[in-house]
Length: 426
Image (cartoon, rainbow, N blue to C red):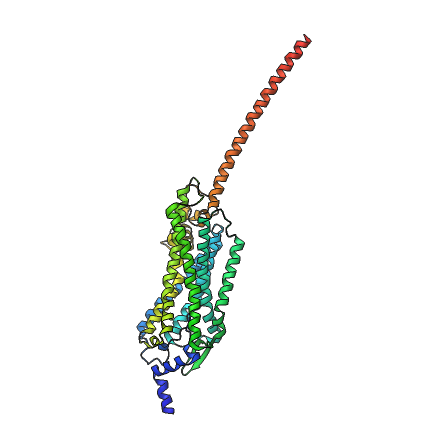
């Protein structure tokens, strides 16, 4: 019996198979950043062990994601909060998106890599629950912030005369999004636990019905966090794109029509690129878990660890691309990044960049950079202001003419009365 037990513990494949048949061990981080894979178990002398040079390369790759995501999203948060001109309804959703990305990068990226590469949990039971719970909530908040922006763009361009999101409604929507995210991710927190096996500790989700619950939960979350919002955004941006590049903006008749049309197109292009980047980064991750859930033998493949590390890196890298997109495609965010990094010798902050983030009125000769002047109400305000000036000038001119006519009429009447009186006296 002892000899059989010893051979079982030293054989990675047999040890892996025994974990697959066990409820609490097969579900080891089966979903969202929970990195127990059969290829990660066993001692470090088995065929799944990585050479030092490969570990170093993966460390550099994940460190790049961590650094760029942290600094980029923190600068985005600073740009929006520190400049009143950037505090628009749409930018509040971008702020929420940046907060979720920087939080996931800070709390999960490095931990995911360590657990995926080493196959051992070093961070305690409490952080195990948070580690499983938070990424799902953060991704939910990110994707539905983008969905809210898509709906906002749809309402602004297709139905410009209908009521829009106010600042209060925007904050309520953000709170509701995070509330729904917490509810969706709560089962992961509830069932997460740590298990001590020979030579290591594992963090996993102990589902009641073994792997069936894990696979079904991933299908539900993939639909709610990936498929459904992407379909909604695909429909809204398709309609918006046909309108902007086809028939034109409904109800838009300002003198700067072409200028506003180009500004709206730039905004839509930027947001479509953000959505496509998110979709491409997370597609392999969802496909990986669905395929391995349907065919569990793939978990014993020799190169599955490298596949998982690649898929995980691509998913984690989604947190670092948005600040780069904002900086490249938006002049106000670009000015904000220049101001944040003006201490660098190769960064030049011009006077035009300084004016980009100041609270100014609408400039008819300059194209809007972001959402503030891409709305119909800005054009309507400008048109109304000019109309009021014209009407006030006309009214003043009319009053002066009427007054002059009244004075003339009064003087004529006075002359007539005076001549009549003189005649009567004579």
